[in-house]
Amino acid sequence: MSKLLDNINSPDDLKPLSEKELVQLAAEVRQFIISTVSETGGHLAPSLGVVELTLALHKVFDTPHDKIIWDVGHQSYAHKIVTGRKDRFATLRQLGGISGFPKPEESPYDAFGTGHASTSISAALGYCRARDAMGEDYKVVAVIGDGSMTGGLAFEGLNDAGSSNTDLLVILNDNGMSISESKGALSNYLFRITSKPIYNRFRQDMQELVRNIPRFGLGMFRLAKRFEDLIKTAVFPNMIFEELGFKYFGPIDGHDIGALSSALGDLRHVKGPSLLHIHTIKGKGYDPAEKDCSRFHGVGAFDVRNGQATAGKGHTTYTEAFAKALIALAEKDERIVAITAAMPEGTGLDKFHDVFPKRFFDVGIAEGHATTLAAGMAMGGLRPVVAVYSTFLQRAFDEIIHDVALQKLPVVFCLDRGGVVGEDGPTHHGMFDLAYLRMIPNLAVAAPRDEAQLGGLLACALAQNGPMAIRYPRGVGQGVELSATPKPLPFGKGEIVREGKDGAIVAIGRMVHTALDAAEKLAREGLDLTVFDLRFLKPLDEEKLTELAKRHDKWLTVEDGVIAGGMGSAILEFVSQKGLGVQVERLGYPDRFVEGGAVSKLLARYGLDEKGIITAAKSWWGR
Image (cartoon, rainbow, N blue to C red):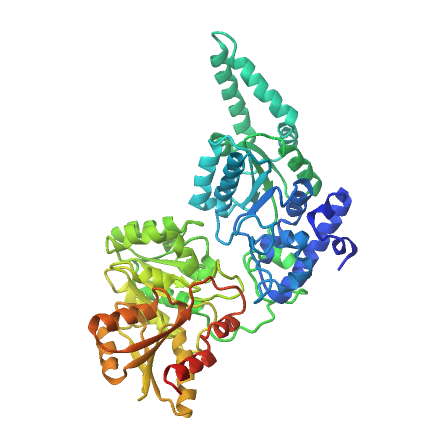
């Protein structure tokens, strides 16, 4: 570790540094992030893009008394390094280590927990109103990226904040959004003038003076304001922020630490809602990340010398299997269209776009809109497939109920990252989907046990006249061969994949193969169990379950989801309602948020690996 960074243990250590030293420190922080993330994996490109901004914020503001709220939070690595977590940074996203996102219980410098997008402005405004109500005195800064600005919640926050007249600074970190860029000496000059406290006091005083001129004051004020707006519109094509009630400043270079520090120092004294627009480069300082910022947005371990992944790929991933199946099915049915909420690569829909660009729709970070858009498309005769991470579909809960399920529309939801997803932790685990989806009337819910069945369930869903959700895990599949054109699996039907005489394990999704492996080992020890792949959580295969109850009066359910309201609960309700007399023991996640860590370690910790199922089965059957 270099000398400057060696001596940075809190934001107070930044205060005496000169601009030249801050530039050097920024370079050291970048290299520290690159070196660490190459080992741990993580959100590299976003964090590299805000190093100078982070240092400037902590130099100018009095954190943690002043509050900095990072939207999404995957750009907070430099923030963690300079706020006392440098020595633990090697544990980033590891089980028992520091989180990859802001986490208030981890540090007082993490003002608000953020893992999903577009939340920072609303949360910051909440802080401002609490501050004002409590008679306290601190600054609140929301840092939001251009991607997060596509989310509806961000605009709801802007709309409310703009009319609040409270002191709030929003920093728009623009690394590629469609807001036009203002360039040139005039723009820089106007920013330097308009950010100064003396200018803002003068503007406010002159407005009051003109307003109070007898008879002509109000008319003159309106004329002057219209002229000012016209000038600003010509120079700053971002008048939407001014119209929403914000004082708009910028844009400025987000990698010029001197300009950032000067601007933030001035903006600390600007009253009311204000917005600073900065331009940054995602992946700044690491050539592979700058050239391919999408891949380095979230990356596994890699070789720093060339940016190449160090882990082998192995089998086809579920995401790849989904993309192949959807493309094959879309070639046969021109009604099929695909929708993503700013995750084309993550969901595999970038491959669909390459083949069917006119049938692909990226709506930005707007899952609710994606869902209602799909409902309208379905009403118009199309067959929309909404591909989304399981955790992000939670943001469209009302739209699923009100706009899709209530009207029985043939919308297919494909939920990637179902179950625990690993190092990104509780904000990204797809633990709740089975529980929250199965309660919705008219909505079918299924999970494949392997990548080939994913294609079969997709074909099944597209053949229905109502909505269906398919959830599947992150990562590689079982190595099962994929068919060129998937054939529909039977709707609402499960499958016995192993026969036994002593009892039954009922599993769903990726837990089926783990249950099978456990059952084979148990059989060698004298406990012979049937394994039933439920496949459809809704509708349940009541016929096969009833037959299973005639042969086995003790069942063990296994699911990669929460126990409360999940698959095991559905089985309990079924055997109770039918009076089948079956005793049921459930395995799944307890009533708590699951921490981040490697998937294998998390499954082991919660008894959902092969060893955990064996232990639970021996206990349940008294062996």
